[in-house]
Image 1 (cartoon, one colour):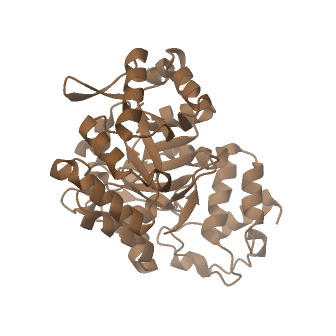
Image 2: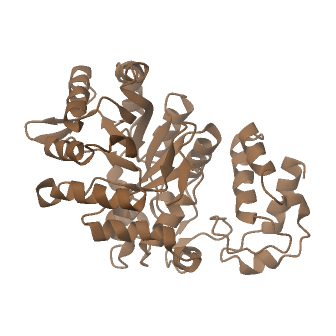
Image 3: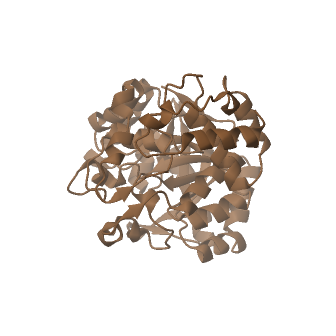
Length: 382
């Protein structure tokens, strides 16, 4: 298992994490089975968005005698009332729900306390002014949560939260179909077939800016909906009209700036292990670029997706990483110190490019790589 830095939190998390979608299976007996499989695989990060008390208790039992082996991302503002889930911004309900969750989970702290499901700008404002953010910051000061997170599907709202400086971890929906759509306060638009009916071209700029801002600001991204609820794995259901593999979906998400962990939901140990198998998959099995190029309704022409099809470079330049760092400076319109340091750490730099153009003959998307290398050399100075 490969472990990544979760932004600036200081936590090192497995790049494959455990989603909670299947925890309720078999009257919650599946919870322990999935945690056992996670421990064997070296997975140390999990998400718990559900407020179902039976699931929470099952997670608490599954963590018994091994709490320190797992980093818990658990949601605040997700409560259980009258036998069903409810998202709330009522402070009294939020407080009671959080304390109840600690008891059910048999723990006295949560590693990443995640403000649940914020997709509207006015909702973010309510969180800021209505006491929710203050309460979460109090929980952090008291040691009941270690870091503050937020879950969202809307890149404009997520960016607002990240730019506030209050959020350390962002749980966000990342996959190559959702990334094409403009921001919306209606999450249903992400899987509305009408939005994919026409020709779609390249990544939505708000989403690109969000990922790059997270990378630059040290906000770690944990990924939900990597498989689009399974739709991307089925040609008949996929908005792209072409099926992707689980490995391709995971690799795409892990290639985005700022991403630390992909949370793989599973309804069986076998499904979970299929996601974990990504760690031993070949480069060909992970490669998503050729499939992207075959999408009938989607064009990534001229847009670098960091797929590394351009490699190997005759001067051993890591072209995908150089391009990613260049894009980070474009978003900031300056060279942030962290980006400069990461660029400096590369063994070879854009200034070494001899403009041979061999890389461009391999690119499935017609990216002007030589121009990018020229610009990178100018921006970074070498």
